[in-house]
Length: 112
Length: 109
Image 1 (tube, chains in turn orange, red):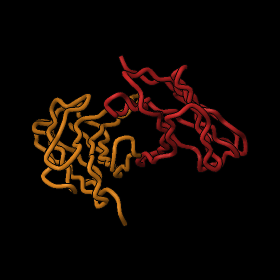
Image 2 (cartoon, rainbow over the protein chains, first blue to last red):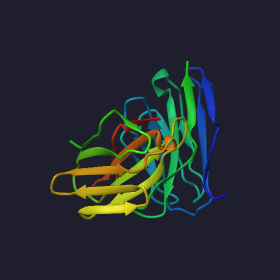
Image 3 (cartoon, rainbow over the protein chains, first blue to last red):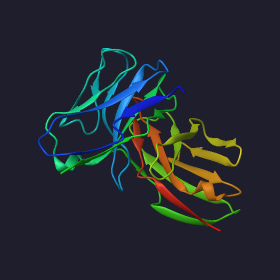
Image 4 (tube, each protein chain N blue to C red):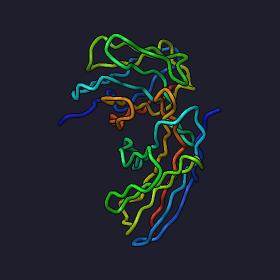
C-alpha cells in the first residue's frame, strides 16, 4: 500500500540518549516534513526538505537534525534526548506547494 | 505574528449539522486546509480553499473569506464516526503551513 511508513511506533527513551526516528515514503513526493504534536498545541514543524539533498529548519528545530540522502527517506535524529522532547512525531510528504500533506502513523516518544 | 484560532471543543448530535470556525492571520496567504484526525491516528486531508466561497464535498463543505481571514468547515448529517479533531491550517507566503490547535468534535447519539 502506497504511503508513508514511520518507525518505531512508540519508544521510551532515557534522557541523554541518541535516537533516530525513521520515515520512508513510496509516493515519490519531493517534499517531506517532520512535525511534533503536543496536547493543546497545533502541529509544529521541526524540519523540512523540499527535495532530495536539501533540508530546512522549521519552527522548533533545536535539538533535532535531519538528512535527505534520497527521495524516499527522511530520518529525524535527536542527538541527546531531553524530557521536553516527549511528544508524538509525524512525518509527512507532499508532491508540490499547496498539495495536501500525507502523514505517517506517527511515533509516540517518551523521554524519561 | 502568525496565528490560527479555532474552538477547542464542540458537541453535536448525531444527524445534525455543525459548523467549525477558524480565523487566521498570516504573512501572505496561499490557501486554507482542513484535516480530520481521529484519536491516536494521523491527520487526513479534507479540503483546500484558496478562493472566496464554498467548496462542497459530500457531507462536508468548507468556506473561505480572505478579506475576513475566516474559514469554516460544515459537517452535515453527522455520524458517530465524525467524532474526531478537525485541524485548520493556513498556508503563508512561503507555502509553510500554520496550524491551529484543533477542534475536538464530540458526537452524541
